[in-house]
Image (cartoon, rainbow, N blue to C red; front, side, top):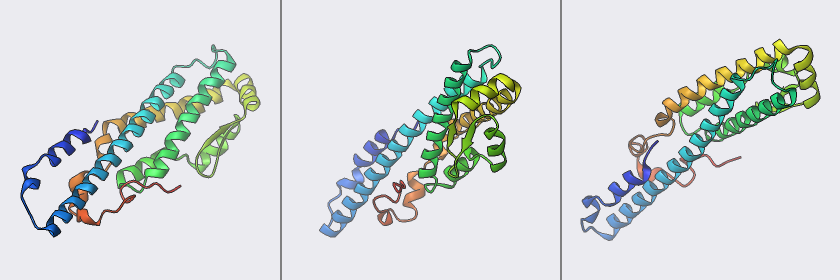
Length: 203
């Protein structure tokens, strides 16, 4: 995980900023420092939320992968699947909100988006996907499908869980490349960064 506070401390303690300068230079320096602080605050907030969601989704996907759909109690299976789909939807919402931060996040969002043809297949077992890609599940149709078409349920849910587990692992491995680094921002002129330009807070 990034250590923004340590890096920020190094920047703020740098002797570069101890040099006496004109009021105009001091104001420019103070503004630059403010925006550096903003960058690290945004980075820390992003990674706190990302790692929380990613690890929860990884654990949930693993639990679904290890579920025996023929042996487990149907209601327990339903609860396991509901939990997995809810966390998946929360991750999708997070990525949709942050996808403009970097090309890496835009690509990650694309990889988590469910294809239209999959929506039709999932609907047969009581699972529906909204236009924004979020999951909803109808309890009775799912339990019915679990009883009369157990193999289809297992194939669809286990398949999604397995792909999700792989994608989350890859995202965690490459996580330090998701949020733009400070040098990548500063080379485009740090003073041009405005509040909200690093993290997209629009809904």
